[in-house]
Length: 262
Image (cartoon, rainbow, N blue to C red; front, side, top):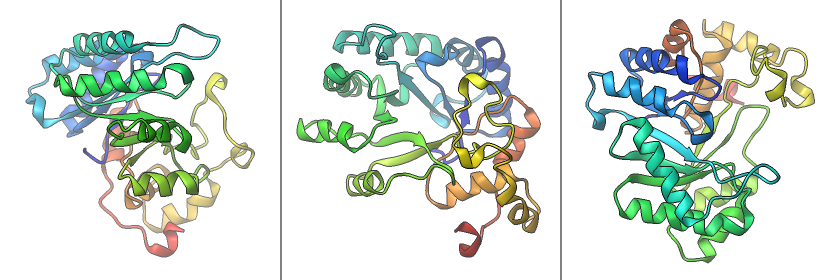
């Protein structure tokens, strides 16, 4: 899996084709999306026009399993159908990494996972994983003697570290943490109040503690945060619609000292 990818949450279907085209032109090799983002068809349009062989870039998408009080939870067949729909919209014969987006469907989690195992057997997905899962959710898979997830996509940044128990469990079972919301400490992150769930420590300007360190390396705070994740071994999925930011988010050819990493 490429260590730097493009996150596409909150990029509209109308805009995402242009953004993905720019990203691929700049050398991005990983595009992350999800059924609930409602932009897979725009990504598929960009992919279909790209002059890059399919095996030269990596696609992650996520099945929406349902949410309490919101909709019916996916069953085994529904999960299979969701993947087929994503494949059609992405205009791809396979998905590199297919994830269950959240663990909310308590009574359906195992059959949803069994569906992903079946999709992998069919060759429609290369690898399977989860997102936003805690230890107890992954243990259900382990105790059912099913193949374990290869990855767990979770929020990781200096204000939101991986809980020790989850980190230990994932290390034990070779489950890769994939970081999202890496840029959460930036003051303009999630401007939309609908999605602003910052902890109290981040309410004013959460980037202030990182300004001096970034200045030391002659980089932006965004680059510092992204490199911090990479040096911890966590793939990143920064989202932007700006071509300049796309370039900057790839320009990470520097090393943070062990002192500054802490």
